[in-house]
Image (cartoon, rainbow over all chains, first blue to last red; front, side):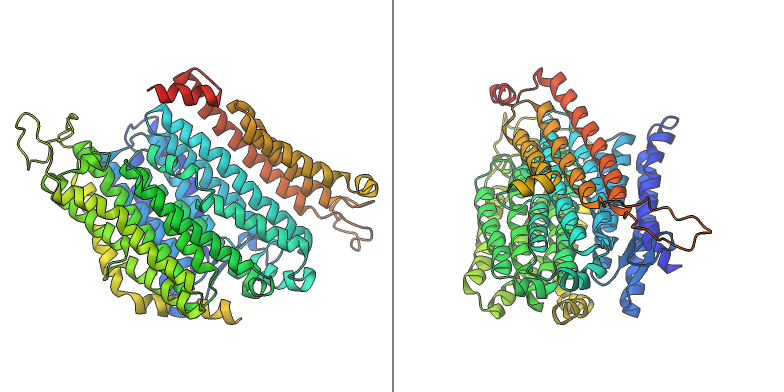
Length: 504
Length: 123
């Protein structure tokens, strides 16, 4: 039974994605209910799967159609993919609590939402490099559709920009897959790990080019500087209900896929045997950290600022991929999971604040702590967690990466990691200062303190903020702090896997 | 060089198409032409897969039930299946891209990127 769960997790959301549109012909607001039921079922299955994997310590493998490796396509749920499956289903469930009131409404949104969930789960579970391309494109296509769900023409432009750049990225990955296939004759990830040294050898030009194409393709999808240009527009112009989902999951799962490809397919021996391979990965990550933070500090709009912050945080993760020791890799995975929770929560808070007060720029956040104390509080907690103030999941991830950099003996990188904390504080502190220490501009003696009062002069919408929107944001903030105590747990869950990929 | 062109012309065409597609995506101001560029870029990859799967004198990978087994050289069907799947993905992408362009055109009345930039900066 358990070996069918990986397949069910992918098939269920994709099949059910047709229902909101079909049933929606008769019942108008059925989309949310369908999505909520499906996501809850997927979350339950993901938890069960993770429980089985972590108690038995064995990977759960599903062979599609009963064809064995390397002929058939495998779905592999192991210690690495299980946390990401739980993360993807869990965050999707949380975002639903927001979209019930916060929108975007309409059954087509929920169809795209379920397809996106199916694509993300496929990306996390697949054990076949071409299958990964297909799920990468499913994820991409639904993301473009979700961004275009925004009301203005700007969101269509942002979606088209992402579509063109994202497709080139995914196609580059496909070229890499093609070169790997020509060199080895197999597409299965586990099979490739042994076939690459045996059939082609690590120095083979085809393998080297394949690695370059795969890395650049995923650098576009993860939005590393200077290939990040689609990302700020996409995050800013997407509807407020879709941004948390996209920002928390799409780049995160792509970064997971890159980890899988680098360490399961190409393996650490490849990185070691190729001169400068790991240095290039570390350099690209470091530049992304610095440039992303610098651009974030300059932004006026809060959503755009948080988008550039993602460029820098993912730089930190990719930088850790290149350090190749167990502490840094654990840090990378913890920071990936932590960043998803923190950034998802931050965008949920920003969306709720925009719905409640209409504030969208850093300037308009003045005096927010009085008008929406819970949202300002959650935003502050999540922001400080992102900076890396202990106890929080953000601190844990950055701490492991910094220790890993010191263990690797690459001092400039350790400096970059510590500097990234300072730079993150640079843009988060601007928000905190506005919210807590700048008084709200009063217009015509409008009373302060009531939720619906808007300092910026926009019409407040009474009842725009639901208990679900408030609850899920506060929950994200609490989770970001609570997971700060889980360093030992992460080490015992992911440690054995990292041990295997580093030492064979 | 000449020998390369004569024997490996499909791979040379792959590189040329890839470059032309990428150049169109970057240099063309027309949004529809950008999407065509993306299509060309993908088509180049299809060509690469099909060219790599070509075997001189290879037979169709269908073995009759009662035969003793394959006696001749058989072509691997996998690259062709990959191309078929990738074509489907490409069609879906083109459809979404063109739908977005239709929406941009109704909103701003132009298909050119430079005009679009001007119109938006006026707002």
